[in-house]
Image (cartoon, rainbow, N blue to C red; front, side, top):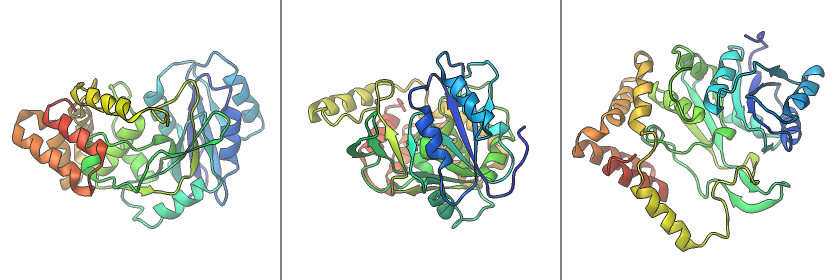
Length: 311
């Protein structure tokens, strides 16, 4: 484990893979954060380009901790490994290798998290500005409006953007109480949010964009403004009838390893998700619970998939 630092430091956790093109811009934006002490910990996941040599240059200058173990763990396990390596105090933030952080990203997150009880698990995430490969604005945001990340939505696979996430030490300590390193967890960010709400924690959304979410040839994720409404509709219809590769019930099975740390309400919700395929009445209740925070297209889509046992 990396040696501990002073309290209230920020530990930025970055997993890299063949990211030579944009990684220096991202590292510099992280190191230039205002009003906080940044400790950048980077683990390379088997890059074959110049990523590792770039990281070593920063490490030699004492600007980051470089973890190189020669293994290709894939994103979820790589980020989980970073959570293990980080010291047991302060705040923790996930970072992708190709984005660009605004200077006040971390100070905003800390300020909002500090308004809550530090003795419960906490997760912060924010909006982000969608930009092209040269950081030019595409006049889009990841989230079009204010989000309401209820526990029901989180446990049903609600999309929290991991590259904006910041979480507290309480959540880290609970997460590390169970060894899930060899289990099939698809998304590190989604799973940590699951643990958070299941164990009586809170997920906080900030509608102010705190970073630039770069779109390029290797990561365009559906922000193409040129896509017609008809194509978008066809895509949603296809998604509606396509069964998820990994069910929300499968995720709940893994999450039950944390049963002894769950709140009474959290455990009940996890069990409802775990067993939602067993009866139509259970599916009706779970689908209806998604609408508590308001109707959005993705919630309606998820509710229908739950009713059809395809979530």
